[in-house]
Amino acid sequence: QVQLVESGGGSVQAGGSLKLSCAASGDTYSTKFIGWFRQTPGKEREWVAAIDTVGGFTSYADSVRGRFTFSRDNAKNTVYLQMNSLKIEDTDVYFCAAGPAGCVMVFNPSCYKYWGQGTQVTVSS
Image (cartoon, one colour):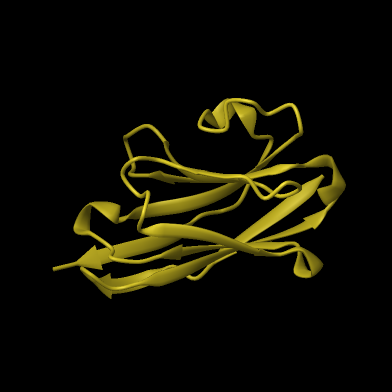
């Protein structure tokens, strides 16, 4: 089992920044990918970004590329998502998820086995 805890959400004005954290504990050796998704109630979960925690490879959705950036602290089993130039449409509940080494389509929620509880990000004008 892997437990994921997100933090760092909050309210910010458009153009501002937030830094989300995803701390993993438990059998973290069984996971390789950490993904971030966001979801508005009643809508499908949208993939935001993913990182290969072993090789460091990162990928981002077109909507956030150039504004969001991964970093990680392997000693703390924590992945960070720095979100800059936030837009009103970035408002959502953000979830981190952990997937195994066989996770190829990192943008697909079904690739991930473990999920955090979510953290709210609200961007206002």
